[in-house]
Length: 387
Image 1 (cartoon, rainbow, N blue to C red):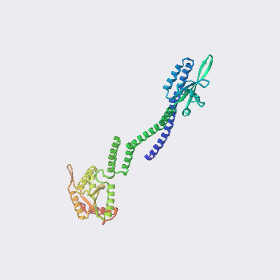
Image 2: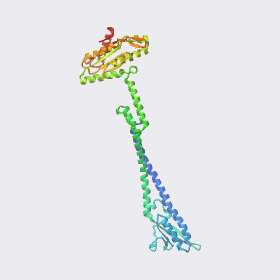
Image 3: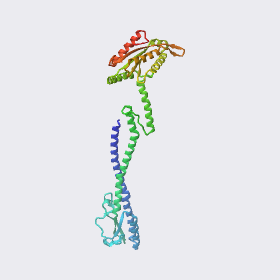
Protein backbone atom coordinates (compact mmCIF):
# COMPACT_ATOMS: atom_id res chain seq x y z
CA UNK A 1 0.00 0.00 0.00
CA UNK A 2 1.33 3.43 -0.93
CA UNK A 3 1.79 6.04 1.80
CA UNK A 4 -0.73 8.39 0.13
CA UNK A 5 -3.42 5.73 0.56
CA UNK A 6 -2.19 5.20 4.11
CA UNK A 7 -2.55 8.93 4.82
CA UNK A 8 -6.10 8.86 3.46
CA UNK A 9 -6.95 6.01 5.79
CA UNK A 10 -5.40 7.93 8.69
CA UNK A 11 -7.59 10.96 7.91
CA UNK A 12 -10.71 8.76 7.81
CA UNK A 13 -9.65 7.14 11.06
CA UNK A 14 -9.15 10.54 12.68
CA UNK A 15 -12.63 11.65 11.59
CA UNK A 16 -14.18 8.47 13.00
CA UNK A 17 -12.13 8.91 16.17
CA UNK A 18 -13.38 12.47 16.57
CA UNK A 19 -17.03 11.42 16.17
CA UNK A 20 -16.60 8.44 18.50
CA UNK A 21 -14.84 10.61 21.09
CA UNK A 22 -17.63 13.18 20.98
CA UNK A 23 -20.32 10.51 21.42
CA UNK A 24 -18.43 8.76 24.21
CA UNK A 25 -17.82 12.00 26.07
CA UNK A 26 -21.43 13.04 25.60
CA UNK A 27 -22.33 9.88 27.47
CA UNK A 28 -19.62 10.66 30.03
CA UNK A 29 -20.98 14.18 30.55
CA UNK A 30 -24.52 12.87 30.95
CA UNK A 31 -23.32 10.39 33.56
CA UNK A 32 -21.45 13.17 35.36
CA UNK A 33 -24.59 15.33 35.36
CA UNK A 34 -26.51 12.40 36.82
CA UNK A 35 -23.88 11.59 39.44
CA UNK A 36 -22.49 15.01 40.35
CA UNK A 37 -25.64 17.08 40.19
CA UNK A 38 -28.99 15.34 39.96
CA UNK A 39 -28.27 12.40 42.26
CA UNK A 40 -26.53 14.72 44.72
CA UNK A 41 -29.48 17.14 44.85
CA UNK A 42 -32.04 14.35 45.05
CA UNK A 43 -30.19 12.40 47.77
CA UNK A 44 -29.47 15.47 49.88
CA UNK A 45 -33.09 16.62 49.70
CA UNK A 46 -34.38 13.15 50.58
CA UNK A 47 -32.13 13.10 53.64
CA UNK A 48 -33.20 16.62 54.57
CA UNK A 49 -36.86 15.67 54.22
CA UNK A 50 -36.42 12.75 56.62
CA UNK A 51 -34.91 15.02 59.25
CA UNK A 52 -37.55 17.68 58.69
CA UNK A 53 -40.32 15.13 59.13
CA UNK A 54 -38.89 14.38 62.55
CA UNK A 55 -38.43 18.05 63.47
CA UNK A 56 -41.93 19.06 62.37
CA UNK A 57 -43.14 17.13 65.38
CA UNK A 58 -40.53 18.88 67.58
CA UNK A 59 -41.92 21.87 69.44
CA UNK A 60 -38.52 23.57 69.33
CA UNK A 61 -38.59 25.54 66.11
CA UNK A 62 -34.98 26.63 66.59
CA UNK A 63 -33.72 23.15 65.80
CA UNK A 64 -35.38 23.30 62.39
CA UNK A 65 -33.83 26.72 61.74
CA UNK A 66 -30.40 25.29 62.50
CA UNK A 67 -31.04 22.30 60.26
CA UNK A 68 -32.15 24.47 57.32
CA UNK A 69 -29.28 26.91 57.75
CA UNK A 70 -26.69 24.15 57.90
CA UNK A 71 -28.10 22.47 54.80
CA UNK A 72 -28.27 25.76 52.92
CA UNK A 73 -24.69 26.60 53.83
CA UNK A 74 -23.32 23.18 52.79
CA UNK A 75 -25.27 22.77 49.55
CA UNK A 76 -23.90 24.84 46.66
CA UNK A 77 -26.78 23.87 44.39
CA UNK A 78 -29.43 25.41 46.72
CA UNK A 79 -30.08 29.13 47.12
CA UNK A 80 -33.05 29.23 49.56
CA UNK A 81 -35.29 26.81 51.44
CA UNK A 82 -38.98 27.32 52.35
CA UNK A 83 -41.28 25.11 54.41
CA UNK A 84 -44.95 25.77 53.62
CA UNK A 85 -47.98 24.34 55.43
CA UNK A 86 -51.11 22.98 53.82
CA UNK A 87 -52.71 26.44 53.71
CA UNK A 88 -49.72 27.91 51.78
CA UNK A 89 -48.20 29.82 54.67
CA UNK A 90 -44.44 29.90 55.09
CA UNK A 91 -43.57 28.16 58.32
CA UNK A 92 -39.79 28.36 58.14
CA UNK A 93 -37.30 29.75 55.62
CA UNK A 94 -33.63 30.52 55.17
CA UNK A 95 -34.69 33.69 53.37
CA UNK A 96 -35.30 35.68 56.55
CA UNK A 97 -35.88 39.03 54.91
CA UNK A 98 -38.48 37.87 52.37
CA UNK A 99 -40.04 34.77 53.89
CA UNK A 100 -43.45 36.38 54.25
CA UNK A 101 -43.34 37.62 50.67
CA UNK A 102 -42.76 34.10 49.31
CA UNK A 103 -45.63 32.64 47.34
CA UNK A 104 -45.46 28.91 46.49
CA UNK A 105 -45.09 28.70 42.70
CA UNK A 106 -47.43 26.43 40.81
CA UNK A 107 -44.63 25.55 38.34
CA UNK A 108 -42.34 24.15 41.04
CA UNK A 109 -40.86 20.86 39.84
CA UNK A 110 -41.47 17.74 41.88
CA UNK A 111 -38.19 16.18 43.03
CA UNK A 112 -39.14 12.88 41.34
CA UNK A 113 -39.21 14.57 37.92
CA UNK A 114 -35.71 16.03 38.20
CA UNK A 115 -33.53 14.76 35.32
CA UNK A 116 -30.96 15.93 32.74
CA UNK A 117 -33.54 17.88 30.75
CA UNK A 118 -35.49 19.54 33.57
CA UNK A 119 -32.37 20.53 35.53
CA UNK A 120 -31.54 23.12 32.88
CA UNK A 121 -34.95 24.84 33.27
CA UNK A 122 -36.10 24.28 36.84
CA UNK A 123 -35.81 27.18 39.29
CA UNK A 124 -37.79 25.69 42.16
CA UNK A 125 -38.09 22.09 43.42
CA UNK A 126 -40.85 20.66 45.56
CA UNK A 127 -40.40 17.93 48.23
CA UNK A 128 -43.34 16.51 50.20
CA UNK A 129 -43.20 16.64 54.03
CA UNK A 130 -45.69 15.74 56.75
CA UNK A 131 -46.40 16.31 60.43
CA UNK A 132 -48.28 13.85 62.59
CA UNK A 133 -51.45 15.21 64.19
CA UNK A 134 -52.64 12.29 66.16
CA UNK A 135 -53.26 9.62 63.56
CA UNK A 136 -53.54 12.07 60.69
CA UNK A 137 -50.58 13.10 58.51
CA UNK A 138 -50.67 16.84 58.00
CA UNK A 139 -49.06 17.67 54.62
CA UNK A 140 -46.24 20.22 54.37
CA UNK A 141 -44.10 21.12 51.40
CA UNK A 142 -40.41 21.94 51.20
CA UNK A 143 -39.71 24.39 48.37
CA UNK A 144 -36.08 24.50 47.26
CA UNK A 145 -34.87 27.45 45.23
CA UNK A 146 -31.92 26.36 43.06
CA UNK A 147 -28.79 28.42 42.52
CA UNK A 148 -29.05 28.84 38.74
CA UNK A 149 -25.66 30.54 38.50
CA UNK A 150 -23.80 27.61 40.08
CA UNK A 151 -25.78 24.97 38.16
CA UNK A 152 -25.36 26.76 34.80
CA UNK A 153 -21.63 27.14 35.45
CA UNK A 154 -21.27 23.44 36.30
CA UNK A 155 -23.23 22.35 33.20
CA UNK A 156 -21.21 24.69 31.02
CA UNK A 157 -17.99 23.29 32.49
CA UNK A 158 -19.07 19.72 31.76
CA UNK A 159 -20.08 20.57 28.20
CA UNK A 160 -16.74 22.27 27.60
CA UNK A 161 -15.09 19.04 28.79
CA UNK A 162 -17.24 17.21 26.26
CA UNK A 163 -15.75 19.38 23.50
CA UNK A 164 -12.22 20.07 24.69
CA UNK A 165 -11.18 16.64 25.94
CA UNK A 166 -11.92 14.84 22.62
CA UNK A 167 -10.26 17.75 20.83
CA UNK A 168 -7.18 17.37 23.05
CA UNK A 169 -7.13 13.62 22.33
CA UNK A 170 -7.44 14.34 18.62
CA UNK A 171 -4.60 16.89 18.70
CA UNK A 172 -2.47 14.47 20.71
CA UNK A 173 -3.08 11.75 18.13
CA UNK A 174 -2.28 14.11 15.24
CA UNK A 175 0.86 15.31 17.02
CA UNK A 176 1.95 11.72 17.59
CA UNK A 177 1.27 10.83 13.96
CA UNK A 178 3.17 13.93 12.81
CA UNK A 179 6.20 12.88 14.86
CA UNK A 180 5.87 9.32 13.58
CA UNK A 181 5.70 10.63 10.02
CA UNK A 182 8.72 12.91 10.53
CA UNK A 183 10.83 10.30 12.29
CA UNK A 184 9.82 7.08 10.50
CA UNK A 185 7.63 7.43 7.41
CA UNK A 186 9.38 10.54 6.03
CA UNK A 187 12.89 9.01 6.19
CA UNK A 188 11.60 5.81 4.57
CA UNK A 189 10.04 7.84 1.73
CA UNK A 190 13.31 9.75 1.26
CA UNK A 191 15.17 6.45 1.24
CA UNK A 192 12.76 5.22 -1.46
CA UNK A 193 13.49 8.39 -3.48
CA UNK A 194 17.21 7.77 -3.07
CA UNK A 195 16.92 4.13 -4.20
CA UNK A 196 14.90 5.12 -7.29
CA UNK A 197 17.23 7.98 -8.17
CA UNK A 198 14.79 10.82 -7.37
CA UNK A 199 17.20 12.05 -4.68
CA UNK A 200 20.93 12.14 -5.22
CA UNK A 201 22.20 12.37 -1.65
CA UNK A 202 21.51 9.82 1.04
CA UNK A 203 19.15 11.45 3.56
CA UNK A 204 19.69 11.71 7.30
CA UNK A 205 17.46 10.24 10.00
CA UNK A 206 17.06 11.06 13.69
CA UNK A 207 16.43 7.46 14.68
CA UNK A 208 19.56 5.38 15.01
CA UNK A 209 18.00 2.22 13.56
CA UNK A 210 16.85 4.04 10.41
CA UNK A 211 20.22 5.78 10.09
CA UNK A 212 21.86 2.36 10.34
CA UNK A 213 19.45 1.13 7.66
CA UNK A 214 20.54 4.06 5.46
CA UNK A 215 24.20 3.16 5.84
CA UNK A 216 23.57 -0.52 5.12
CA UNK A 217 21.43 0.41 2.12
CA UNK A 218 24.17 2.70 0.81
CA UNK A 219 26.67 -0.13 1.19
CA UNK A 220 24.39 -2.59 -0.64
CA UNK A 221 23.65 -0.09 -3.42
CA UNK A 222 27.38 0.47 -3.91
CA UNK A 223 27.83 -3.30 -4.09
CA UNK A 224 24.99 -3.63 -6.61
CA UNK A 225 26.45 -0.85 -8.75
CA UNK A 226 29.80 -2.58 -8.61
CA UNK A 227 28.21 -5.87 -9.64
CA UNK A 228 26.28 -4.14 -12.43
CA UNK A 229 29.14 -2.12 -13.94
CA UNK A 230 32.47 -3.58 -12.75
CA UNK A 231 34.15 -6.74 -13.95
CA UNK A 232 34.73 -8.79 -10.76
CA UNK A 233 38.02 -10.32 -11.96
CA UNK A 234 39.92 -7.30 -13.29
CA UNK A 235 38.02 -4.50 -11.46
CA UNK A 236 37.62 -2.49 -14.67
CA UNK A 237 34.32 -1.68 -16.39
CA UNK A 238 32.41 -4.70 -17.65
CA UNK A 239 31.01 -5.08 -21.17
CA UNK A 240 27.71 -3.39 -20.33
CA UNK A 241 29.40 -0.41 -18.69
CA UNK A 242 32.08 0.21 -21.35
CA UNK A 243 29.44 -0.23 -24.06
CA UNK A 244 27.35 2.51 -22.43
CA UNK A 245 30.46 4.68 -22.05
CA UNK A 246 31.12 4.36 -25.80
CA UNK A 247 27.55 5.52 -26.55
CA UNK A 248 28.06 8.57 -24.33
CA UNK A 249 31.42 9.30 -25.98
CA UNK A 250 29.80 9.26 -29.43
CA UNK A 251 26.98 11.55 -28.26
CA UNK A 252 29.45 13.98 -26.67
CA UNK A 253 31.71 14.01 -29.74
CA UNK A 254 28.75 14.69 -32.03
CA UNK A 255 27.63 17.54 -29.78
CA UNK A 256 31.08 19.11 -29.35
CA UNK A 257 32.41 18.13 -32.81
CA UNK A 258 35.47 16.43 -31.31
CA UNK A 259 37.56 13.41 -32.16
CA UNK A 260 38.18 10.38 -30.00
CA UNK A 261 39.81 6.99 -30.52
CA UNK A 262 39.05 3.47 -29.38
CA UNK A 263 41.46 0.55 -29.17
CA UNK A 264 40.70 -3.18 -28.94
CA UNK A 265 43.43 -5.17 -27.14
CA UNK A 266 43.84 -8.93 -27.11
CA UNK A 267 46.58 -11.15 -25.64
CA UNK A 268 48.40 -13.29 -28.20
CA UNK A 269 48.19 -17.06 -27.61
CA UNK A 270 46.20 -16.60 -24.40
CA UNK A 271 44.11 -19.72 -25.12
CA UNK A 272 47.28 -21.82 -25.22
CA UNK A 273 48.43 -20.41 -21.87
CA UNK A 274 44.99 -21.03 -20.40
CA UNK A 275 44.87 -24.62 -21.63
CA UNK A 276 48.43 -25.35 -20.49
CA UNK A 277 48.49 -23.81 -17.01
CA UNK A 278 44.78 -23.70 -16.13
CA UNK A 279 42.12 -21.02 -15.73
CA UNK A 280 43.40 -19.83 -12.36
CA UNK A 281 46.73 -18.95 -13.91
CA UNK A 282 44.92 -17.31 -16.84
CA UNK A 283 42.93 -15.17 -14.41
CA UNK A 284 46.15 -13.98 -12.76
CA UNK A 285 47.51 -13.05 -16.18
CA UNK A 286 44.41 -10.99 -16.94
CA UNK A 287 44.70 -9.18 -13.61
CA UNK A 288 48.36 -8.40 -14.28
CA UNK A 289 47.50 -7.33 -17.84
CA UNK A 290 44.92 -4.87 -16.50
CA UNK A 291 47.37 -3.46 -13.96
CA UNK A 292 50.02 -2.80 -16.64
CA UNK A 293 47.54 -1.07 -18.97
CA UNK A 294 45.92 1.14 -16.31
CA UNK A 295 49.30 2.47 -15.17
CA UNK A 296 49.82 4.04 -18.63
CA UNK A 297 46.38 5.56 -19.16
CA UNK A 298 45.16 9.05 -18.32
CA UNK A 299 42.43 9.51 -15.75
CA UNK A 300 40.05 10.71 -18.46
CA UNK A 301 40.46 7.50 -20.50
CA UNK A 302 38.29 4.45 -19.86
CA UNK A 303 39.04 0.74 -20.06
CA UNK A 304 36.61 -2.15 -19.99
CA UNK A 305 36.67 -5.91 -20.41
CA UNK A 306 34.53 -7.16 -23.29
CA UNK A 307 35.08 -10.81 -22.42
CA UNK A 308 37.87 -13.36 -22.21
CA UNK A 309 41.19 -11.56 -22.82
CA UNK A 310 39.66 -8.81 -25.00
CA UNK A 311 39.65 -5.24 -23.67
CA UNK A 312 38.37 -1.93 -25.02
CA UNK A 313 40.02 1.44 -24.30
CA UNK A 314 38.30 4.78 -25.03
CA UNK A 315 40.77 7.67 -25.46
CA UNK A 316 38.76 10.87 -24.88
CA UNK A 317 39.38 14.38 -26.25
CA UNK A 318 42.68 13.93 -28.09
CA UNK A 319 43.07 15.88 -31.31
CA UNK A 320 46.47 14.31 -32.00
CA UNK A 321 46.27 10.61 -32.98
CA UNK A 322 50.04 10.31 -32.77
CA UNK A 323 49.83 10.78 -28.98
CA UNK A 324 47.47 7.82 -28.73
CA UNK A 325 49.73 5.72 -30.95
CA UNK A 326 52.68 6.54 -28.69
CA UNK A 327 50.70 5.56 -25.59
CA UNK A 328 49.61 2.27 -27.14
CA UNK A 329 53.16 1.59 -28.30
CA UNK A 330 54.42 1.98 -24.72
CA UNK A 331 51.71 -0.41 -23.53
CA UNK A 332 52.59 -2.93 -26.30
CA UNK A 333 56.24 -2.86 -25.32
CA UNK A 334 55.30 -3.59 -21.68
CA UNK A 335 53.91 -6.94 -22.78
CA UNK A 336 57.23 -7.98 -24.32
CA UNK A 337 58.36 -8.32 -20.71
CA UNK A 338 57.43 -11.72 -19.23
CA UNK A 339 54.68 -12.35 -16.71
CA UNK A 340 56.41 -13.70 -13.62
CA UNK A 341 54.50 -15.96 -11.23
CA UNK A 342 56.88 -17.58 -8.81
CA UNK A 343 59.43 -19.56 -10.81
CA UNK A 344 57.28 -19.43 -13.93
CA UNK A 345 57.91 -16.77 -16.64
CA UNK A 346 55.60 -16.42 -19.66
CA UNK A 347 55.62 -13.86 -22.44
CA UNK A 348 52.24 -13.03 -23.99
CA UNK A 349 52.28 -10.04 -26.32
CA UNK A 350 49.44 -7.73 -27.38
CA UNK A 351 47.57 -7.29 -30.64
CA UNK A 352 45.86 -3.89 -30.89
CA UNK A 353 43.24 -2.59 -33.33
CA UNK A 354 42.44 1.14 -33.51
CA UNK A 355 39.41 3.03 -34.84
CA UNK A 356 38.90 6.82 -34.72
CA UNK A 357 35.64 8.74 -34.55
CA UNK A 358 34.30 9.94 -36.95
CA UNK A 359 36.61 8.78 -39.74
CA UNK A 360 36.25 5.09 -38.88
CA UNK A 361 32.51 5.35 -38.28
CA UNK A 362 29.94 7.54 -36.57
CA UNK A 363 28.01 4.70 -34.97
CA UNK A 364 29.04 2.37 -32.17
CA UNK A 365 28.59 -0.79 -34.21
CA UNK A 366 30.72 0.50 -37.09
CA UNK A 367 33.49 1.76 -34.79
CA UNK A 368 33.74 -1.56 -32.94
CA UNK A 369 33.65 -3.52 -36.20
CA UNK A 370 36.54 -1.51 -37.70
CA UNK A 371 38.60 -1.76 -34.49
CA UNK A 372 37.94 -5.52 -34.36
CA UNK A 373 38.98 -6.01 -37.98
CA UNK A 374 42.18 -4.04 -37.34
CA UNK A 375 42.98 -6.17 -34.26
CA UNK A 376 42.51 -9.47 -36.15
CA UNK A 377 44.65 -8.16 -38.99
CA UNK A 378 47.39 -7.54 -36.42
CA UNK A 379 46.99 -11.12 -35.14
CA UNK A 380 47.17 -12.57 -38.67
CA UNK A 381 50.38 -10.66 -39.23
CA UNK A 382 51.94 -12.47 -36.27
CA UNK A 383 50.65 -10.43 -33.32
CA UNK A 384 52.56 -8.04 -31.06
CA UNK A 385 51.63 -5.07 -33.23
CA UNK A 386 49.18 -2.18 -33.64
CA UNK A 387 46.89 -1.73 -36.64
